[in-house]
Image (cartoon, rainbow, N blue to C red; front, side):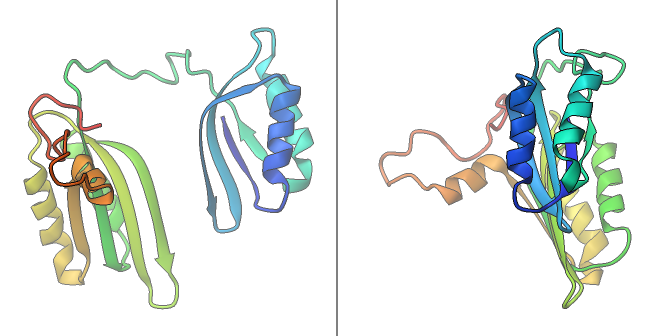
Length: 199
């Protein structure tokens, strides 16, 4: 389910009230505020007899004062969500790009990731209007055999002339830097190893 609404006091209370009245239960959720809009993507379960149209109509009615728009998808609908199973786990990396904003940055990165069958898992970004600079961060899932260093060098070559900085790090390295283990008590290596999924 996705919900887009005006970010005003009480929107989350109204939304959770609507879910409770529908006897819905949140399983997973991601929420952000973008340009004064409350945005939420959530996985939820409802009683089997609950009609999807009733769910959407009820949430819209309860959140009407916030101008809420609601979309609902059934994850069991294979025509909507068809994700092939992969025998080998993917490595997780975090890519960051920052610098002077210019048109086409995200488009170039997205096409370059698609060339290597790299899956986008998470994306966050913002633009500073005062100096027209930007910062974006992406969590990526790499298939086996993809050269992370080559990807980083390709992006650096494209963007360095414009003063845009590219960084690419394995998620385990970032986790180790954020939460260093005391010397002598490190039980998990922060560096990626062959055959791990990087989580």
